[in-house]
Each structure stands twice: as C-alpha cells, then as structure tokens.
Length: 143
Image 1: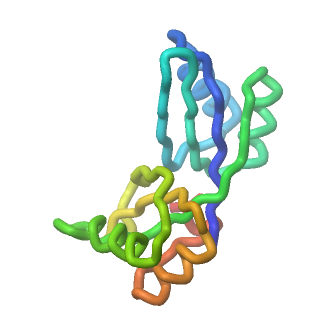
Image 2: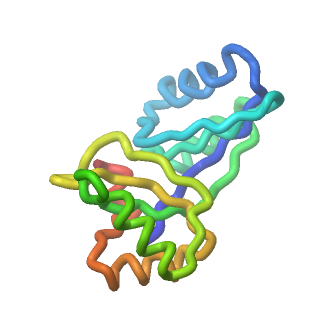
C-alpha cells in the first residue's frame, strides 16, 4: 500500500525547476503531486508522477541527482477537522509525520494527502484499523 515518490535535488538558482518540468513534459511524464523545500543553496523537489522509472531515467540522463522514497497516500475527509483526525491517529500510535503534502485532486468526497512517516508499515496498519482509506500506488498514479 505504498506509493513511490521521486526526489530531485536542485541547485537553488533561477531556471532549475523549469528544467525539470521541461524534461518531464518532453518525455510525456505527468506530474500528479509535488512538494518543493529549499535552503539557501539547494532544494528538494518531491514528485509523484505517472511513470517513475522513466522519470528517474530521463532526469538522471540530464544530470539531476534523483532518489526514490516510499510514501503513503491517504484519503482525508474534506471538511474542517479532517486532516486533524488523521494526524491524531498517527499521534496516538506514536508515528512521526516527517513531511506531507496535498495531492492534485480529490477522490470523491475526500482530499488526498501524501505522508512520509517514520514507520510506514505501522502507519498503514493504524489507518486501516481506524477506517481511513489508504490508496495504493497503481491507483494514485492514474487519479
């Protein structure tokens, strides 16, 4: 029930982000979700795309350092307190959320959130025990 995310390490300078999106576009790779974190010297672009293997290959071939990480995609009630409920489940179970970001679109009545957890297996287990839908990679890449 994990989703594969790619991380691209970028110099923090004008045009580097545009280079990544250009390469992906030229190769027919669709970005489904993204997050960008930066420092004064570099940034980390986290992406969920519809073709991870091809994205990693074309970005590496163009000189970018690319990593792979497993994350969890979760349906969160799209109402006040929906995210808080999910975070409360993690807190009660002692699971740390290392980072999170929103997905491109909703899934029915719910928003979709991407979580990087310190214990993904336990995180998926407690979510399911609490009736929270976890979305598998094959489905998330095509939403």
